Length: 449
Image (cartoon, rainbow, N blue to C red; front, side, top):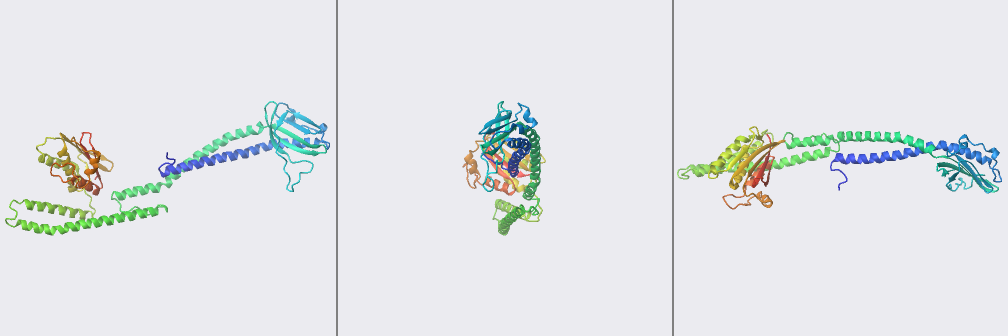
């Protein structure tokens, strides 16, 4: 199970969302704690006043002087959760609602390690009345000659929790709105922050399409090294390609002179009675000149962009195939739009389609289908037949140079590999799969012109 999304924006958004939720939860808890302390402070002041009055009413012998007790008004209304009690070795006195208070922690010593003279500081506590009302209390221990006297005063806990709950509703709403605003700000930040990556992708596509030589190096500091490395890779590939083109051009140029000499020799009387050898030499010379022209056209600065319309080229090739295989009455289906054109040299296209149509014609039982479909910036040519087809293992071997899968006929096993190589040189691809017709389906993809 993947915890983080695959995209950078998704990962950043997920991390930002998680940290924002944790920060808002921490803020809500912290603010609630502060509000609780602030709200309960008023209740503590009332209880401290009552405890102080009761402490002054405790005599030195541990008894309580009721004449000195003046209850605060809230303590005179029973059933509201207000009450007090004084416990001494000499007796127990109560007022208001009876309550049970949980024991308070031991009194803290002062900085010198001594107890406060006569009494210890008031301590907070919690309790419950006989009617089930939760109360908040303050407890004070007074030292007398009879022993320690515990003075406790308590008030309803709801006086603190009710305002706190009322305050938490708008607080949580405000935090939720803040979270939504932060999420929106994070989304906008990611869109703006990742915009250079999308621009770099577009620039790299321009380089791949041949409309630009390099990607712009005027990038943010984090992307500038990447742009420089991409440009260096483009230059390195261009240099290697130029070296290969020069090698091909030199080889073709070196063959021109021997071919010319051979043509002169064959022109001598009696050397080539039927002219067949001179036709073969002329064909070789034409191919050599073609590759020389390609090397010159592909050289830097030539500005040459090949463009070949598909319909006429396919019509010529199918006519040739029908003539060569006149004895085979195949049903040929051609679906090619008149305006479909590819960015490929005409001779390269003839060689690729010729190899694919020859294979389809030789292996088809009754039908061959050829279609051209535009897909974005490319055109996919599919050539299918209803022959026996190939297995998945045989399809992989069919693209190996020199590997013949059909020992019948005069093939040499180089047609499909040459087609694949020419397709890749022209920026396309060749894919072989089983055809719905039952035979083989060859999908030739080339850039649209």
